[in-house]
Image (cartoon, rainbow, N blue to C red; front, side, top):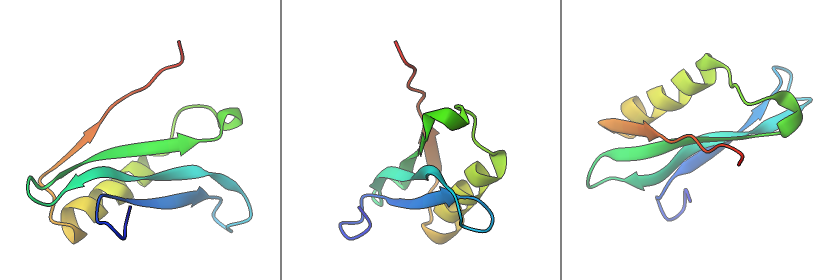
Length: 79
């Protein structure tokens, strides 16, 4: 995604990088419209809530580094 400039994702790990929890990042990046979607993929045994600081880090990167004006988030639930 980063190579074709459609998004960017990072690993979500413990503070000492010894445990992998999942990943989070920006999808459907549109430089023309200056927007993207935020997303997380987290291991199911950790629950569904993510730390607000990770949201803030990803949003700050999108706004400050990528020059986005809008970041959207969609919620998918198990049915």
